[in-house]
Length: 251
Ligand code: GDP
Ligand code: MN
Ligand code: MN
Image 1: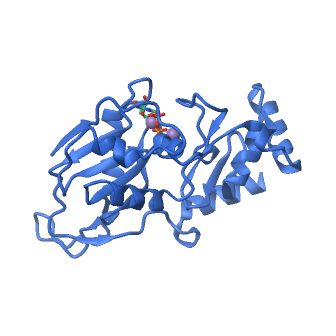
Image 2 (image 1 turned 45 degrees about the vertical axis):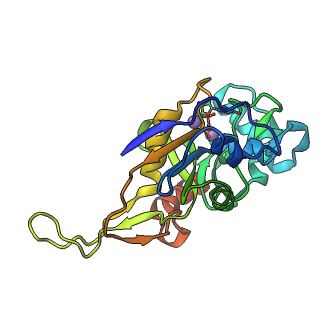
């Protein structure tokens, strides 16, 4: 397969028709997968906000004061308030804020960004990245869209691209029931393809001033596999999250 960045995209502003801006710059083929950095989706959707829009409540003030004490860095309680308002669960509140966003993604600071944001203080993640992906898909001459973000991971240094939302394809390829080279049946392997494509696209998009938020994946073949759309674990089946909850809320 080939990956390439869509060239010459401008600075994206609220109300911009991202699909049209992309279509003007590249001849898409029907089976392309168009990977779009959430930063520009958020900008187009007007998710740029000022810190003043988040007057801090008691919980946010408490979290910020505690973080300040632990890290020795200045923490704005309004930022903590913004994170709380974007989240349905605080999984850890120290030494950093790890939360579940309203659409099910778990990330540090609810994915709120301060880089590549010229017009305001903060950039929130798209409200419903799956819906954003579907709108982009309808606006583009492409069948498949993935909305990505750069995220850290537990256990490993460094960040990489992950999928926040997708449209026109399943999230995962289900290998269960197929056989390995020795004829043993695969019992658990469900390969998260949208995250893998997001990681590959993120490699091309970069993180800095490159100006390449949209990456086209061409000639990716799904193959003969069943699909699954489970992407974000629910709490009952998420033992790591349960363990973190127990640890951070006891101590
Ligand atoms: P994130 O991974 O979604 O948080 O986005 P990043 O901030 O890492 O940016 C990914 C890529 O998009 C980088 O190449 C940035 O330079 C680029 N980028 C961010 N905002 C814009 C924009 O408004 N216009 C253009 N053309 N590129 C942007
Ligand atoms: Mn981001
Ligand atoms: Mn990034």
